Image (cartoon, rainbow, N blue to C red):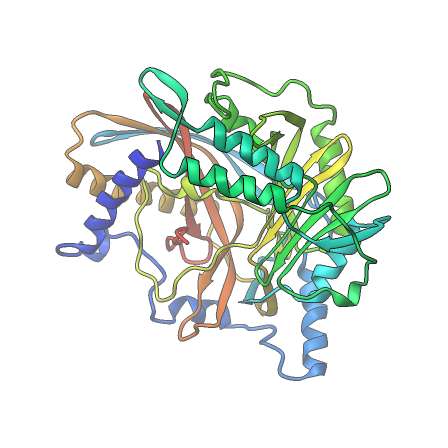
Length: 466
């Protein structure tokens, strides 16, 4: 599926970067390096980047006033958009909820990428290691190596038209010999007294508890990960249902033994954010998931994976999976800076609490460029979305010689925020109001979801490709 969609993307990219450019009436408008968008935003600037401690304090005050303090506190207004129309080679079915917060202000922020510091890392470590009795540098235990030996001796799982099976692989004997050597050299685990001041980045530590359980922490400048099993991973139900999520698992498998409700799991994460003082991330997605032991494929638990994204200014947090960028309407527009990865936190929760946390790509909003920028009307936004669909698909159709009629279904249009470049700036981006449009397309392999984004200020398209 992903490979097929990537081929289509390469076709679309070649259209936009080869040959003559269309006339202005026919092109998809992007944020160009001409400063026009910045001028719209800065006509009545409220707060620039702070230059001294007093200004910094005032800026932080303004940021806090415009931030979404907590999750789900603002009402969400939904308008239905139903419209069907046909283009050459494309049937577009729009049956979408238009979703936005009932808020008066639409702030624009100036933002920069930052690194996690030890203050942040220690706060996360302290939260998850209450009651820990000792710590050690993380390394493979005898139990870990024994499981890896089972895997090496079993071979490599391969798929073909006849199904899946275990086979030997190149270098298998050497890997087995190396693991046997490591097993003979492995020492029993020993833990030392926890001295928080000794923690430094990069950090790779294992914490022990009196009941025999452990918590592992891996932290670097751009990521923090906390997990309780060194050889286990989270699998989403949407992956599992396809089949072979582990070797031989049948297609259509679902997770029917979750012992915690979606609401309860969300509350666990909300409480964690409050305890850690994090008020700029909000729940963007909740999905059924499980924790699966590597090698043995034992299901350790079933629960929920909760994904959090930034929600500065009460914008609805949205998470777009990387594969959702590569839909039929994908193109890579002209930009004047490479797009940053969006800050993201994922948390796996079951009835016992948080079992895994991953937090990546931290960003800091350092000032307000405009506390309430004027955004386009919903009707104008609808027209820009339809224009985007028409022009993007016409380019795909032109180059790929599509002979059959395709159909896409627009399912939701959400007012959120997105990172976009600033004119003449490499260190800073803007967080602007944006409409994210989710649409579905079906092929013989199933139905998949993709997304496009429209700047809510001027209607220009936003590049979602990182």
